[in-house]
Length: 443
Ligand SMILES: Cc1cc2nc3c(=O)[nH]c(=O)nc-3n(C[C@H](O)[C@H](O)[C@H](O)COP(=O)(O)OP(=O)(O)OC[C@H]3O[C@@H](n4cnc5c(N)ncnc54)[C@H](O)[C@@H]3O)c2cc1C
Image 1 (cartoon, helix red, strand yellow):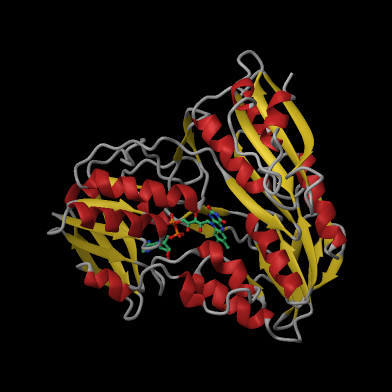
Image 2: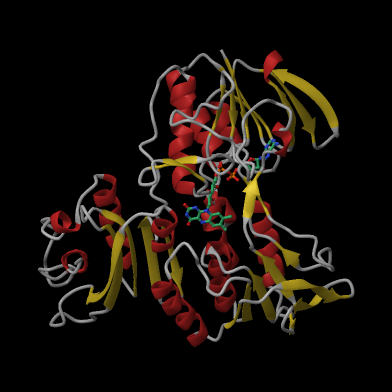
């Protein structure tokens, strides 16, 4: 039995590790286009900011550690073609540029995404970067650390863009966000994003919302960003406008892809082609509330689905319980979390829903340092089942979202969660916790 893994970060190495544990004698070969394996890209903004001064801390396991588990690891090797009829893959050795063929019994496609980079005029100027890989993080940090870099423009106000905003503020830069949409962090609803925008503005960030980048100006190095509304000084630009699945090499393979290029898989991570599995950012993922596949490129799903793929390639039939799109972000002194459906998603699914947006607090006022927490709930009108939850506050907001995730996962109604026996002691929570208060406000 021979497993070939294409892409060796979260999904790929989770699959390879699980497969190895279940199948100690199998041959496992990993082809990874980059120079690093098995690292937590989620830690990159905190490396750029200097909060973590050692990028090797983000590496969960090294090449040598995987080799000690009996895996054959090829870094700087890019799979350029898959031929399922022959159970073959074609690989380009990026050191020598030579092509060669390998064969598999089971194939794992875990190639993640690539950042979207439109062909803006001036795109090739120095100091215009993306943040996707560990290599990107190392380069971005080196540039950002230079004292001559004073004005940073972040194009795109999604998770990565806003995390880098904070990193740049920590490094003492002047920061501007240019975002095409009328608000940032659009997986959250506007009640919360307005508060996040306010927080950024209070920390000196210039927010240019509803503004379209048209190109970059400079001689060798970027000096300004040109938008449809103005021109802004920039010594460094981060492009964070989204990602697309890294699946171009599957063209002609017969493996079914969605319109955006994500590999279509079932809940066991099987593609439409026998013995070819896929998981992580390059693939779709089953959504528990939507009851259909969605594209939600997050480490949460990549690790779990990769592990399931490994188990299933070893002969098991484990189904993913389904994502809720649970995610969190820190925006200066605020933390934000979300799970399940946003109001926008509920609208798109034509669900008859109701919402509440409730302000309460992390603990009672008679214990020091009480801070407010705002919670938004999206519930099905007829059943009062909780479909989605979002929270924002200075502390305690994000982990309350995990309570809602478990409730949504188990189909609980607002009434049931509103009476669930959560902990109470003044340093931590009120007798009616913020979670109860929001649930009991549902009409
Ligand atoms: C800055 C940043 C912050 C993030 N923060 C969070 C967070 O807080 N929470 C969260 O849940 N998620 C977060 N994520 C997302 C998370 O990192 C990804 O969901 C996760 O890494 C996906 O894992 P993956 O294995 O599917 O893909 P990737 O990590 O993208 O790995 C795919 C690998 O495949 C390789 N590859 C691609 N094509 C080929 C090919 N043809 N041949 C060989 N190799 C190939 C690539 O080089 C890459 O190393 C963040 C991501 C970034 C960039």
